[in-house]
Image (cartoon, rainbow, N blue to C red):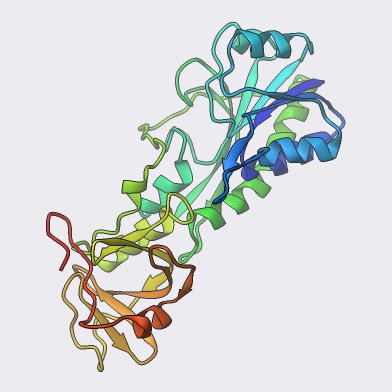
Length: 316
């Protein structure tokens, strides 16, 4: 079949690579336009654009699948559209342009976590099992019939970035199998069943760690917002990025019982109190500085012991 692929970030690359190596022909790749990255804001092609270039595939760069993008895609006469984390909606008439319509690889077990950030929301909610699904794209958000899915037990300390990387690799095989079945005329899709939950794109505010919550809940939010949009605490009025953290002990002999937001040193470990238990900080990044071990950040401070701000309170 002639396939048009739409995707943008790194988790879409394994699917593009797998399709390019399959018996089908990828006739075009749609991705978002170059974005400014780094401190110097250098315009940089998306990971999918870079992969398509390495594979020698023609690229259409568009931030919206508007009339111009639709015309460019239509000119390729695709049999099937495949979308993986493109970052935009497919509407009519583009939705019906390929002979077999569009299919989407989505990183959740639908209908749970429909939306832009399914893995992040799954981890924040404390889900211990998630997965991936390939479904038929329809006008409603992530609501189409499902061709295939896989289940994945989330490692207890895995971050959203790590889980997404694994699902991207596993999902590529799931996706190519569905494409093969559609080409053979044997694909069967079934309606989604169960209660739908939504997973909208996260903002910087979603990465704020609420230390009045139990430590297990704090760690789930850290995992779900790492690496993006980034977990953080507010210390002395400035954001302290939390790059690596674990659930700490409920009490530590040399740190005592820590109140929510109170820091303590237990041996070489930096702990911060939560509503129940503690969070053990491994790697942090203070404002204006690079990443460092939490113990080095502690030793480099001057004055009183730090304290993290709590929701609804002033920084102390």
